Image (spheres, rainbow, N blue to C red):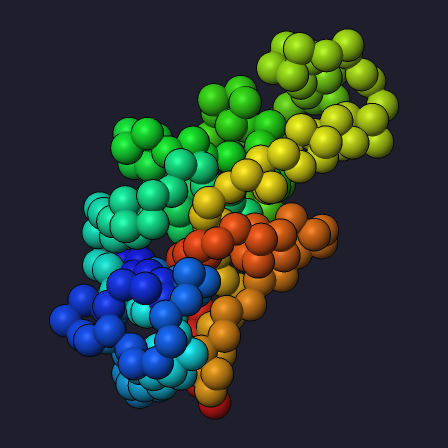
Length: 222
């Protein structure tokens, strides 16, 4: 597994900084590299990189988790990031990116509800789609009451609302948003995530810096 990543203020490895106005917004995409029988994936990745850089982003290529973590930490340092919020990024989980960022002094906040609960509990996800399926409602109630220092709630809607209210302040004060990408469109260089709530949109648009991390298999040919 070999991710790579994209931002709009740092030149790609072995490449040049894109011309045109510079922006603090960045769209990033770590990639899984590898040989293909047809070369379609490789051509799509190159085309997507060209379109991304034309729009002010920078694509970084990484071959392993250590390279992904190093690249993101460099972006953090360049932009003086103190807090990062995350959404929909399984590759960053595989890379143990949170540990790498926290080691540099960055506060990292998971915003997907299941991942947020597990971050509070200091546990890894138990399922790729339902990461907190192993915990009961009562366990979540106890955990949120302890970590938020609020009266214990038992209703599912109440628990969700409590988490939403707690996360709102993090969204407003984060310097960086980190996401995955379900697709990267070669013709436009756009990244796309599929989500059933609004946190993914907030993470990718509200912070002044956005980094998207995904595998090369997510680059869609024209």
